[in-house]
Length: 272
Image (cartoon, rainbow, N blue to C red; front, side, top):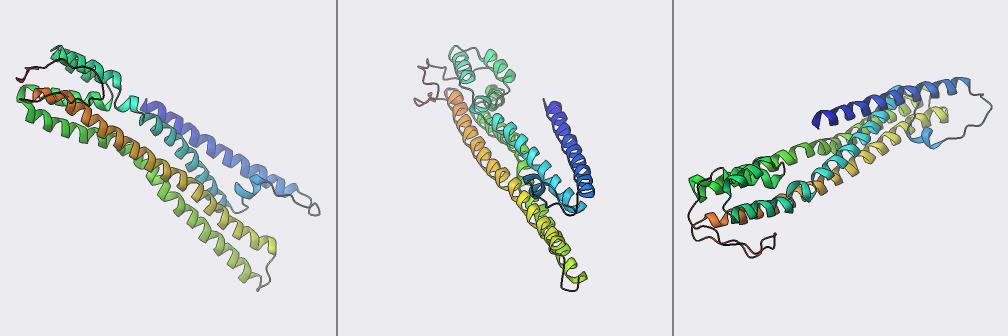
């Protein structure tokens, strides 16, 4: 799955670079063959995706590429953060039924085969059942911390894109203003308005694309991170409810998310 995602990302990068080069070539040919007396009509493409300066053009298309990557990552992480992938209710019910029926080995095997956050935390806790409830609690906390880190680490790519993109946009802004002022100086204070506007346009368009990338990327990062925090916290409570009967004198919580009538479980710690 990871290799497939990397191939898709590489394909998107190559496609965007190809479009960038093709666009630059076409626009250069159009500019060379255009009649001087013909009035120019500015299209949306010319306003936001093209500039006559090569450095500004590269800056714009790098930001466009970042926008495509950020969109793909947002969709991928949004699907990853769904509740069915973190705390599937069916897995909880199945493990709960096995524990109620004292099929501890089957419960451990089922949890080991479950790729969700819930399954991995249950597996870590149940692996320490023979060492007592305290060991199960420690294993639960350690496994949960490791799995939460595993879920949150890829989200940093969105955070990086959201923070780098405005910097690239600012770079284009500064560069465009330098071009504009150099044109002003070289013309002795009487520049060609079209040449002066080209530098200002580069400055504004790069800023525009920097914000286009940063705002959705940072918003998606915050929302998905909060969703993962909420789901993993709920998952920890579900696992604690599953292992509570292993504690001497412990009883299953009446507010279990499974909403099932649990049969009494042994008070003594079973051998896993």
